[in-house]
Image (cartoon, rainbow, N blue to C red; front, side):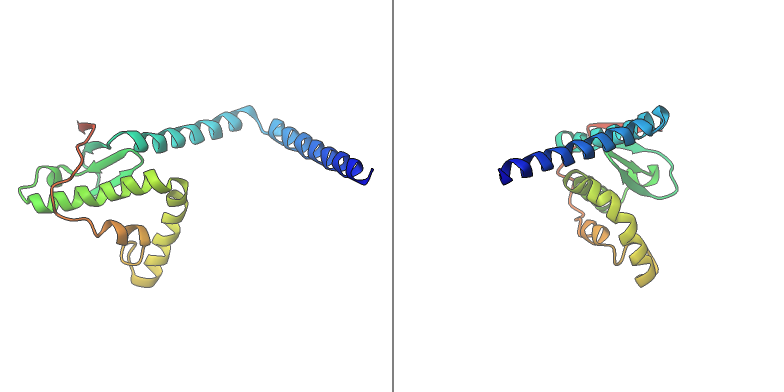
Length: 155
């Protein structure tokens, strides 16, 4: 009899919790729900994309030299068209490492990168020297990349 009462008690608590969660989500304005849902969906798609396809390279002036954002590697034209092939290979391999980090770690990378960049800024004065994600990417070689961009967009 005690087991039946315990099961009923757990069932009642579960139903109350579920009702409160549903009530909570229904209290959020629809615009906010759809906006948050859209952001989560786009992030999930960019994460899933990197499991299946090679990155999309965008050649454009950006003020940062090169950076990776989800499935995109954005690179300055001066690097892309550089005669210094080793420098270009190193930059592409560095950014590809971030692309793979995004594929493997996803939300963990997105949450921890800014924290580790801040830590690195405090410790060494820049976001790269003591940032785990950058230390890993800085091990990139100057060998020709073993990957080919899925698409190259030039802006």
